[in-house]
Length: 76
Image 1 (cartoon, one colour):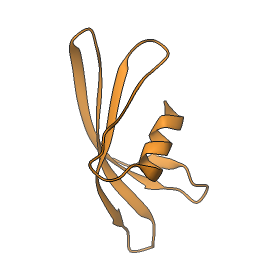
Image 2 (cartoon, rainbow, N blue to C red; image 1 turned 120 degrees about the vertical axis):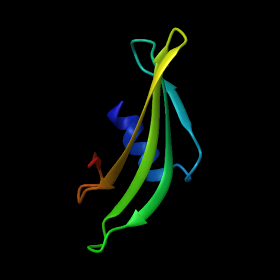
Image 3 (spheres, rainbow, N blue to C red; image 1 turned 180 degrees about the vertical axis):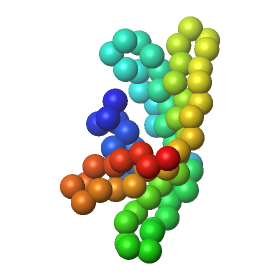
């Protein structure tokens, strides 16, 4: 899941949802909703993530920023 998250944060256009199914059969949909740059030059993206199976899902919103090694870390 981390690999999918990093790929989506790095390359998906804002507003384009990316969907995958994790190994346990749970559907995940992730969409970057806003991209911005902090004062120190760090790129960040706000996102919405929906996780669900069997007709039930939960939605979470947050912000992730690109770290110096290229990985994206959720900061809120």
